[in-house]
Length: 386
Figure 1 (cartoon, rainbow, N blue to C red):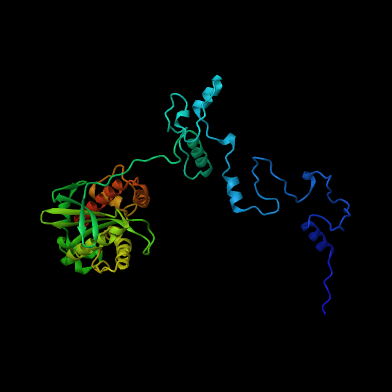
Figure 2: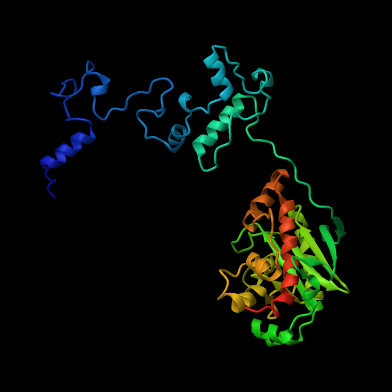
């Protein structure tokens, strides 16, 4: 039988501290131990019951929960409420201030239109200030969220296909159309021998302009996998004396099969995709969506012209970067004004799907300019000097 371990003085002190004081017999108060007459604030390790309206709402015998911590974090104090300039001026003048109850539009001060915020909205990163501003809007009879205008899609055709409806916008440009300072006709007349050397693909010596499919996509994110949706396609190809530009937009997730079937058809007709960073991104997102719907299309092929790699090899040493907008400015003389950055496209689409307020019209305009730039760059990149 193992003898019990003797308690050291240090262990006794530790246990007494955990129990709130030295152990005493029932009914015999220990010297120095708190009694009923001892003030509450003098009792060690005892949680004080909160006053009404205080910041501590947890039960004295339980640990503070995550909900209590969040409640204390976002608790709004009267001295932190967003000030109202009108209320401040009225109080200084000695006049009573009309306080609006939530949902009472008639209680707003005279001369102040209902729905006008008390001040500029805080940045989204400041959670406390954002909640305070929201509380102030509710007190003034305003909705919790500011109402934004509904964004309408550009005029387009809604095709009824065997796979469902398809939103398609078709734009036809004559080959004399000028993009920046370059005609899109340059995309039909390019130096094939030099292009084959720049792209390191000998097969491009026999590349015809009619085989090229200028392709750009807009997606819900930059991550890979089947969870990333391609919600907009921009494709263009030469047909006679015109450059035909088509834009496909995903109004509803159920319309994706019809959209992918149309892309597969165009890839069969024009088997050489011309993209910008498409070899490492766009075509893999398209291939993932095609695999989800079990649609076969020649997208992961060897004959793929990625102008990003061509421009980087030829001009990367002399340019600050090899981005598309840099190539547009230096080779095409195109400077975009009020262009929506591609990084904001996912949020715009998700907002539009939720309440039709996301600026997807600007996303489609950004996509249109990208596709026109691909056609113009194909002819300029083989003739420009580094």
